[in-house]
Length: 115
Image 1 (cartoon, rainbow, N blue to C red):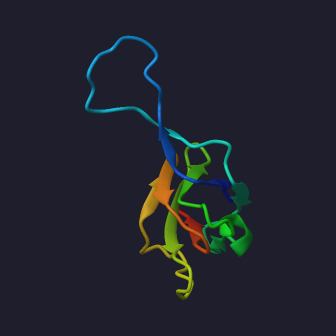
Image 2 (cartoon, rainbow, N blue to C red):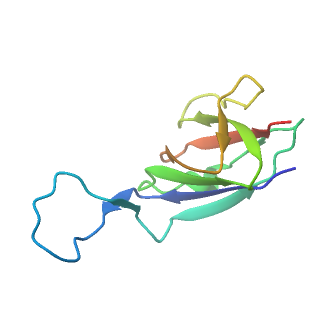
């Protein structure tokens, strides 16, 4: 079993320029904290775990920050609001470490630990 932490956020913000007056065409983006809600899923290699509706209930939810336990990998699927749940299988994309994904109101995350 692994732990998959997920935090919903309203988006990202541009980091302020702290010094100088240099003309810039790029910027550093930071997660817009505090996060809206959080949950921990506990998938194993035979049973997928899915987030419930409470994690993405806020209409301002725009992204999800996902953290997979160090050294672990998961298969994952995202399901937008109003669509049938896509359950993660060994044919789903793989995620390791930390990731920021598009996520909205009513969405869910399903994950399965890679064996």
